[in-house]
Length: 100
Image (cartoon, rainbow, N blue to C red):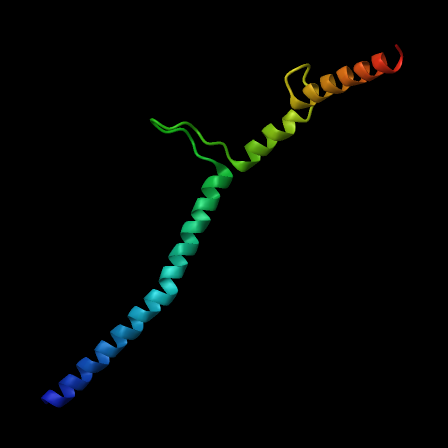
């Protein structure tokens, strides 16, 4: 093989390497970012178990259940009970001042 043919083959390989490098940059990098975002979403959704030095982080369904529980009366401790107490106190206050 003469030098011109060899340089032509090597030039072809170099061109292919540039095309492959471009494909990696424009295909693989965005895919990595998308996969990382999906992993972060799953971690946020499902929460994390406790690890040494770090407390457990509840997931979204567990947080929603805790919020829903605040809207149910539980004999004094929920937000619903606090609203009921305020409503009762306000009703008594209004009736006291309307009928002196």
